[in-house]
Image (cartoon, rainbow, N blue to C red; front, top):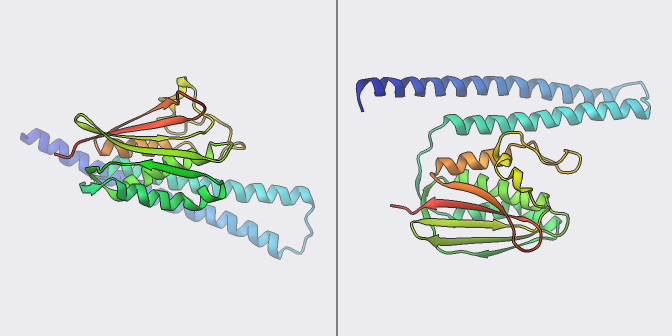
Amino acid sequence: MNEKEVQLLDELKGLRKDFRAFCSRISSDLHGSLRNIGGFVSLIEGHSTIEFDDKVKRYLSFVKEGAEKAETLIGALTEYSGLLTEDKKLTTISLEEPLNLALSDIGPLLRERHGFVQTKLCPVEIFGDVGLLRKAFGYILDNAIIYSRTAPHIDIKFEKKNAMYLISISDNGIGIPDDYHQKVFEPFERLHPAEYFSGIGLGLSIVKRIINLHRGRIWIENNEIGYGTTVFIVFPLRA
């Protein structure tokens, strides 16, 4: 690496650091303001001497709900910006570890929806970060549960294919039109109105960024039989 490349790399690291600091400051200020909004609405509801009619009560609930959604959005944006700017040191891990952690995380929601998960795994070791991959698996599994109108059925497979590992996560959900198979990985891309399915449209963008950090690739295909989709991920073999 020549002197000019070293200088550019140092400048890039400086810009990343400044951007992280900027995002952190803005996030902290916005979280504080939103907490104040929610807190004062609660005070009005609980300590006001005025008896509000149903319309005013509904308006106050809209304010609280909006503040809560904004806080969720800020948290997701902070997470996404961190993935854009942070350099993670990857170590040798077993891919089953983050998967099992993610399965534990979604356990309560899965039981609530009377769903089940079926796995067929082979040993997979990659250079990775357990925490990040736990998040990636978690977002994918959450979608498989949320976007299902019946009891969720999720199939997970790990396979070794030539010079890579292939991971597939299939569901029996409502499916994704072919035209949106790439768009769903773009920030804030939503296929359904929020009143039908919750979410802010950043989950799969975060997943894609995490997979890219692991030098992997992710895509979606419709299932050949029945409803639902399959998320495919490939990782290079550990050298």
